[in-house]
Amino acid sequence: MTTYVVNHISSIDCYKRAESHTNAIYTGNSQAEAYASAINCWLDLWNDKAEWYVDDGDPAPMATELIELLPPEGHEMDVDSMAALNDFFCSNAWEIWQPEFINCPVEQVEIQVMNQEADTVVVDEEILEAARGYCMVGE
Image (tube, rainbow, N blue to C red; front, side, top):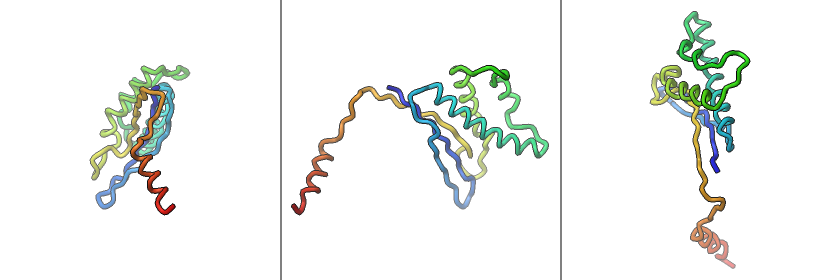
């Protein structure tokens, strides 16, 4: 079974105390839901950034390229168009959320794909035996 995990990584771009925060925004086995979660997060982040630019009288970053990937109003996105939009943001995160002091974009959204081949999970017998041994000490 394939599991998708979508993480939002937000970094504080400070030369004295840089730090990152990661939030899982989706975990499940639907590729479409994973892409939709990632796209919703990317667009929310981009809208915040764009508003800041537009309020200063400047064009929103990469708006010309982005508008080409957005569906017409009232149309739903399929998995391929969501993947293309996600790829756009992944490829342009450095330019849109450009860092000053840290070595990564200030905002990132990633989709991790995990494949589990077997339906069974095996607990390491050596670790179990060690735990049993510690439990028995003093009895």
